[in-house]
Image 1: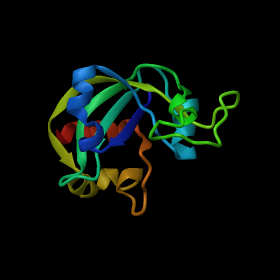
Image 2: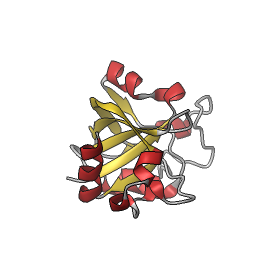
Image 3: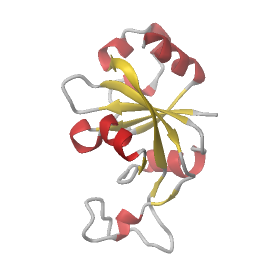
Image 4: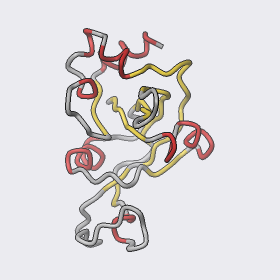
Length: 150
């Protein structure tokens, strides 16, 4: 099993939204590195930290799991979709997504500030200056460190 962190803005789609729908396609990722992780590395059953970004207190708010293997993100082909990409070809898709499944909310938000204070997390991409990826790997050690913070 692998571990991941996936960011979403709570006013767009937050942990409460995922809890309501149970399973949701994680569409609209338009970064090649994040796409490659979803397409090539994520496996059904992998665990995910759900992270709220672009809000008053950014941080980890819940846990989800990967519910499907990566598959083409068809929002890229729809001219009326928010994430339409006119260069994406259905015969050779540029963008992929996975479905994520709600597992649970954390007992509290573990803020980015608190995560940055943990020496055990200093190599985690999330706490690195300039890292803006919306999908990133989390090591098993980082996963356990964060769970203990809860």
